[in-house]
Image (cartoon, rainbow, N blue to C red; front, side, top):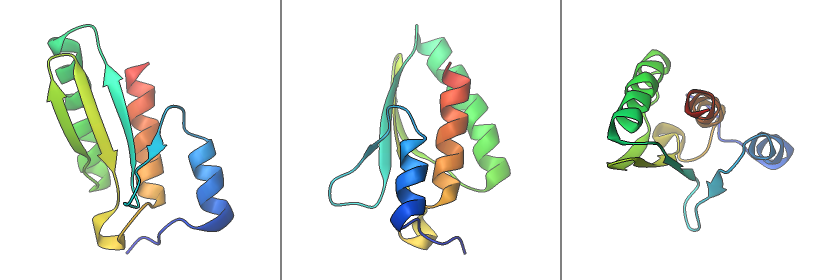
Length: 96
């Protein structure tokens, strides 16, 4: 099992992310992505799905047309872990 991020490690990991927010009342982070159209949004989701499958770490997400809302938490750890930070970085990289 992966350990939850706490203390300085958590602060440093979150500071390294752009545009991600902690969710009130839940040990998770979220971000909304906006793409040119549905095709671009779905293409991004497909690339992320392949990365997530390799990591065996799957996002919570919601897609409407060109917008994708994402929530990341490691359920078996009960909160935020480095798996979430790594997947968030991959999402940002592919969205650029």
